[in-house]
Length: 312
Image (spheres, rainbow, N blue to C red):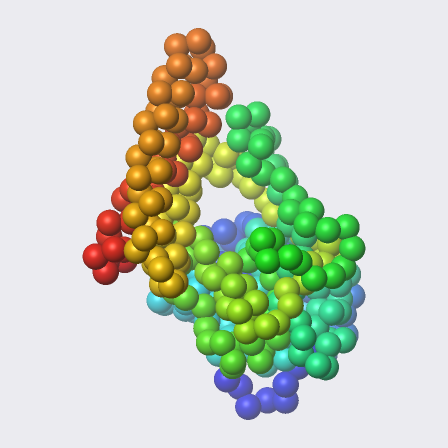
């Protein structure tokens, strides 16, 4: 970590081959209505092969200018953990590389933590609103909606967990609880997820509150490549795998996973049959939805035996 004087806030943007979206994200970040000398922007390039570095260089005259860091260990949580090591801020705000932010986003996001000297709050999540620049096929619409956990600023109940696309932590959380679990989130070639929710669970287990800030909303861009059947099915499969890996490290995991295995055998067969019936009656959208759910169950069936015998 740098020996320079600490800042109030570090904004960390892990990125992988999304240069065009990253440019829009950085444009919003450098236009924040927040004291210029009190925040920094880190861009964590996770081995991009596009023109990511050149995009960051376009903002060299901004204040603050984004700082480019290359993280060669492949994976979102390796990039997040590198950000924690490099950050100078007392608060670290993580954002995706394809979000669009309003000028008051950073002030809204960090307000609860800056006003919390008692260290009651361990994390703040902002609203995430999916937007579709290339359109939204009707068959995937039900899986994409704002979080809408509560209309006002305040704590969340245990069954609600904010998204890593728009998530802030005080630095002391990582000192107390450790870094992100690197086996749970996406890397090139997979669509794992869960590192953020696992960290949120640790925060709550330590007795700290998790807050939701609806005023700190971001628009999360979802291009056409992320509304295809191929993407949806692979995402469902890998998300199920990451949930199993996460659960395997918790108490009484073996019995729970064994019961989930049996349940997902039935789900796989049922959703596959449902997809066939929808195909027969010429309802292709409904057939795709059923197949995506079948693939999710297949993810559990694939990963549960591997985790029970100690493999990732």
